[in-house]
Length: 478
Image 1: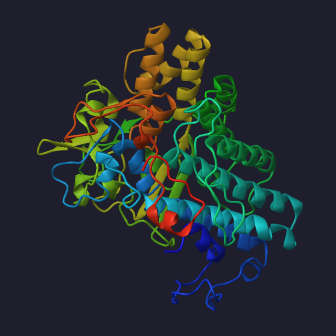
Image 2: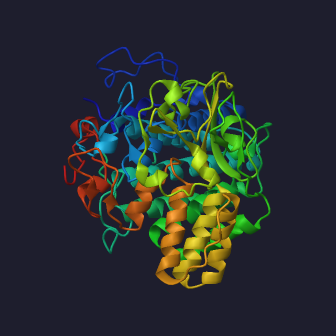
């Protein structure tokens, strides 16, 4: 078996075919374009970056496995009893091993990183304006940072699992080459990610893309600042996380989008955030993934809806009663869920019944910045400010303001975050970063209904294919 790292030498953003020879490590394939042939002008770099964004929307990443891990592996998830096909049941039952781990996300993540690295490696050799060069470099650095962070969230324990952040995490990759690199520590990964993000923010601030493309589908300085706020939160640096969150909140570029119950194609049980069924991002969208039927690697006409909606005929994951029961009867967001013959399904993502062949996934939105600000204010002792931020989210959902204080206020904020960001790729990682147990009351398993914080199951095993091909890999706990 050939490791992902060894395969990366041949991953070029515009590769045009699959390999046909079992011994392809010995001879460069004739039908793969080298970097010097792919990048000939400025536009080629933008095409390559667009391909990297699209890769993040495929079924291994924000279009599937990464998103479902976050809820299925937590107290939010459940396998519906009416699921026709159960794909990746171990995401829920947590009977994890290197064979059934999420190889697709691992491969997709490092393929996307390779695309960014290819852009960075070729950038200085092409004639273009300095502003364009900075813009392209900034986008590539942002992509590389975000993917490394996401890989660390899945395959490593949390940042503060050890006091010196020395627990093993993902592998930092900065070049497309034949190699057997070891895993880096979580501290090393976070330092690397922050370095890339800090440079990206500077490069993206004053440099715009020449193409007519909505900037909320691509990297921007605001997206990089918002992502940095998220990472500071994971690190437990609440002061820095608050500064970045407030910069986005106070910047005037985004507004909280109202939640409107729309009768979409005869379905009265759907609370719709318009951006998730339209290519026009909502006012609170900071970064979204977007793909349609013309994009390579398009994840199917249903996108996330195909993973969750009963109408797709293949609802592989659904909500537990633990999350359903967190919503009051008059909470507008309860319409994100619908019952079919007594079985609950997630109805948060439109995509059925003749809706347009397109797919968007929320990656970063203003709501999260308010939730980060509320949590940080509470942890830093400014309860009045915390209540201001969290009650904006409560009011939009038709819920009464919180008036709590102390530990109860922090618990209320974390619970509201769980309600608001359910099935958007957060819950499992929130439990890890706050060092809480996974406690499933509505549980269909004979084991792993409760997983104590610090258990090996909080970090997915490195896939066996990588272990077989990379002698430097150390597998912890499996």
